[in-house]
Image 1 (cartoon, one colour):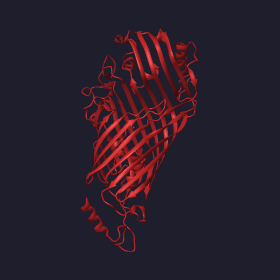
Image 2 (cartoon, rainbow, N blue to C red):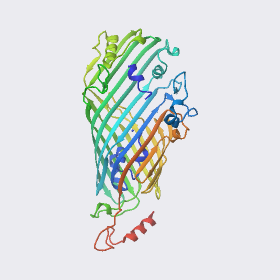
Image 3 (spheres, rainbow, N blue to C red):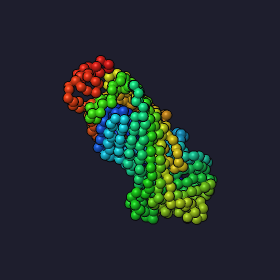
Image 4 (cartoon, rainbow, N blue to C red):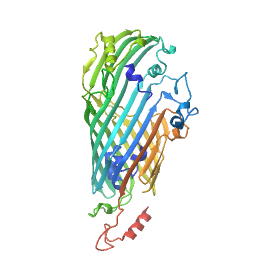
Length: 491
């Protein structure tokens, strides 16, 4: 249990600058699959996108002592704390958490025509999260059992968990304009994602009642916990990679959503010409609701499940106990609590849930090229073992043109932490963060947030109409020049 809980803290970020704009293309489907029908582009290809996000409320480096640039370029001269550590910690008794998220989105594309939107995406994802971690657990990881202030205190902790997963997903998206009436449109969308699990680990601790007697002895009054793992190592000797297959599990994920749009004015869009001739019909506002990352991965290769149900033990000489391998570690725990090295074993497969969430979105037209976006994301746990998303509330003003876009997201992470970000797109290249203070040296180094994208797209209405008469077009006799003038006046 200590291996699971202390190993992670030192190691649905939502990429608001990529997913909320009208040039997001296939990236917008990760927030709501119905979004792809309401882009200013009809064809979009993502070449490569990356997102790295880390946040915790235990370990940090004070911003006055070092910046993110010191970590990157001058990490041999970082400050020291408590003798030999390059970071310190928030000295309080709050429940702790860590969230590490890495997403690499490979070749992906979307296409919209008529009432139909189609998308295909590929992504490699890694997610590590701990939830409701008792304050003393990371302290043990930081100081070790020799830290006197932790001794001879009866810790009685309840209901905390950790989970980590690495998987590849293939997304197939379809969205359809269910209702198109006057200036109103209702679109429904779904993304089905075959999942291929590469590694997974999770632990649920219902109760941990124990006393640290000294630097070599712990008295476990009660332990009620389950743990599962499927890792790319040989459990007998910890060799990496192990002999098991690369893909250790499979499953299916689903995103579903609807978007309602009210257009600023009505344009006849039933013309059956080339898709590039169809104009973009600007909106006054749009609102959406979605459920994202519904599903789980069933790990069957190199997988184990262990349980310790209301057991107790007096563990002396813990400082001299050796763990040469995963099997050695689990065997020693089972023998300690049950007197049998195999008794904790429960099975050779388990299911690990995705970081499921409910999301609400709204986008409001302010004036030409200026919009205001709002997003709310709330986590939902569907399975016993699950990777949990953290909550997010964000307001994002945005300026966008075909060749330039800038957004300034102001967000409330986990309903507690205020963040200000910045995202900039120049033609087909986007780079952004939701914590600009980290890079300006204004925030403590307790996390990292950066994302970037390279893509290309084709804009709606970008090609000229081809017909037997210059005045003949989809707006029944209005010339192209008059139509553009009409649009400018309406704006």
